[in-house]
Length: 114
Length: 114
Image 1 (tube, rainbow over the protein chains, first blue to last red):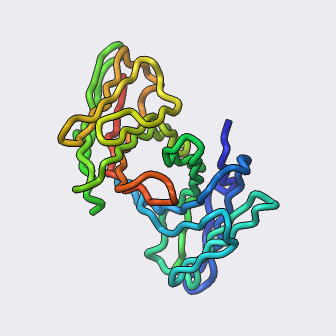
Image 2 (cartoon, helix red, strand yellow):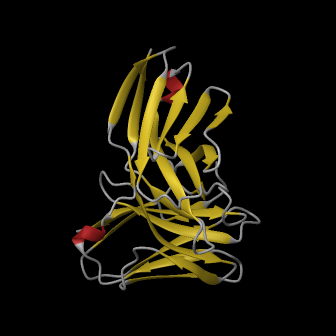
């Protein structure tokens, strides 16, 4: 049962334009949402997070939006750069057990075209 | 460099065999997590240890076990291996649990079962 879903396996964007990566979730008890970026042959690296009590968090070129009523979040990258080409994973944290188990989506491969 | 070290990078073994994957967390991190990523799948949480104690369990098979040692390194033991166990196994560490604290991932161990 996939609690976090990324329905777009891939996305191509021109350099300088906006990249929008989407993520849906089913568990309304998730406390935090995180985005990770993964390059080939490397582990995922943390990018940005948002608390479930907020609807927006911004860090430089990266902004995450959370719509709790729709159980949807998105990552905006503006402007997109070729170095942003990677697989992006959405993750949600469930603190019910006192441990920060992360539930990951299947990832979206972003290609930024120079 | 995340500071998390996983060995070996690659492992090829036959069905029915047993292997041990090793992880050294970032200096000072007390929590260690193990994740499995099968082909075209998201990262599946297996198990978490905090300062030597098991903290949370995910979809970990009974054939798999893990432990965290007093020096905080961790080992994931996979036994009676099956073809379907072929995957990337990631270890991650964090300094605290919950609150959206990011996990820091190693570069993974690629296990191939033939």
